[in-house]
Structures are given as structure tokens and as C-alpha cells.
Image (cartoon, helix red, strand yellow):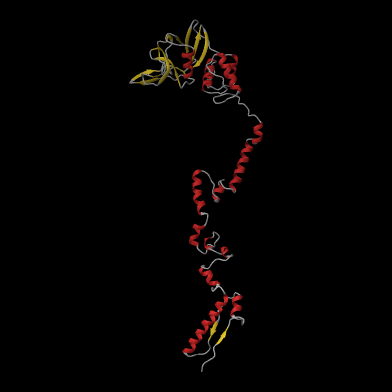
Length: 368
């Protein structure tokens, strides 16, 4: 009652060798019809194994393509690099490994750098927000170009601005410079106002001389050279001396000026600031900031910085002519009375009075 075992191939009826060469990689399917004794089943199974081994031997490489893709242990062929390690490629689909994508994407590093650039004020990130602020290559550059164009429009165009010389101001004041300032300095120097150099720069020394000119001409004391001050310089406005012989220091309280006079001729006119007339307290006593008028002489001199015994401040190279009242240098010499009673001039003017002009102990001082 032994039944005949039949072997049926899927697909067309071809030999195992032909199937291997065609690359089908399909295994034979053994079909046993009907029931068979145990011995027959064993023989049938052995036959199927032998037949399958024959198919595999005919394929040549001993592995099916599906197994090679699953294990990845076979030696790579010439086309293998294009298919190897797809998970490490940045272009891998996010659905393969969503949790690992943030670490693999290159945008993680720029996000850290963007924070640092924001702190340093350099918007070098590729984030849209940085482009919006003008740091990226997109919208920010357009905004920058628009802003640059607006500035050029307000200035009349940078190219045209270079060809056109800027208009000179109607007045001269502290901080200006140029030929007009040089001409002013030279004129003031010729008239005897204290200026050490003609450098074309309207600095503090020039401002002090302009103060003195305005005081001598009875003008508003603002240190700005407008039409009236310029006219006073052109007209040669200078104060007159009250002494007629020898060297003398004259202090004009009303006009807040110090004059260096030689034989009735004014050789230097210096801006000054005397007592402001206010009361003040010093070391438990009350005083009035008053500069006495009269004829005096220098009785004491200090060649250097001197601190007030009343703790009222420092005096540069003072020449004392009555009590604790002295002519001295100071870093602050406004156009109005501001001292506690002494007469302030600039430090450079005080150096000139003592070193160049030669004021010393015994030099007459006339205050009016």
C-alpha cells in the first residue's frame, strides 16, 4: 500500500540549476498526498532534504539574498557601499528611528552656536529668527540694504558727499577746528589774550581767551564766537591798564580779568574767577567768599600744589598777596565768580605768570 511520492515545483517546471542561475532563490516544496506509514514519512523527509541540498549547491554562493541583507556578514560586493549602513546616513527616514534623529541631524550643533552668537552680538546662525534680525543671508540682508539706502538718501549719497565740502558753521565754539579757528587764535594772540599756540583747534585754552575777550568787550560770556565776538576781535577790543610804571598784576573784579602790565602797557589778558560773595563754613567758622580790593604785593609764593589750610581745595603755584588770598592756578576757571576769595586762572596761565613773565615775591598786585 505504499503510495508514490510526487514532487511539485512552484512556478514553471524547470530544473533546480536553472532556477539558481535565474536568481529566483526559490526552494522546492514537497507535497505528500494521502497518509503514509511512519517509515515512508521519514523516507519522504530525507528525500526532501537531499533535493533541497541539491538546489542550494546549484546556487553557487550558498546563501540566499534575503539572509545576506538580514545579517550583513557576507563580504561586500562592488555595489555594497551604496547600500551599507543606511541608519547612519543623515538622509535616513525619520520613521526608522525617531528617537535618534535629533542627535544625528546637523541642526543640533547650530542651535548651540546660535545661542553663543546671540550673546556676542554676532547673528551668524542659519535660523530664521537670526535672518529676520539681519544676521543671516535672507531677509536681514534685504533690511540692511534698505536701511543703508535710507541713510544714503538722508545724507544725499555718500559719493556726492565726498565731493562736496561741508558747510562751515556760522559760529565757532569748543571742539571746532580749522582755518577760521587758527585765524581767531592768531588774532587773539596779537591782541595780548593768553594763548600759547596757534593750532587750529578750539580747546579749553582758546575758550578761556574768548571768555576774556567777551568780558573786555562787555559781551555775553558764553565762550562762543558769533558775529559780535568776532567783531570785537576785529576791532581790537582790549582793557586798559591802571598802573603806569614797572611790572604789576592787575585784577579787575568787575570784569573778572587778570592783566599782566608793564609800564602801563597790558602784555597779557587772562580769564579769571574771584570770590562769589556767598557765605560758607570751614573748620567750624563762617566766612564770606570775598576778594578784597586795594593795592598789595606778593608776600609769599609756593612753587607747586598747595592745599588750603581751611580745607577748601588745592591751589596750583599760588602767589599770596593778602592774608590767605592768592592768585593761583586751577583746573576750573568759569566765566563768572566762583571761588572762596582767591583769584583763579588756568594752570597754564599761572605757569606763564611765574615762569615767563617772572612774577615773584614783591610784585605789586592791584585789585579794583
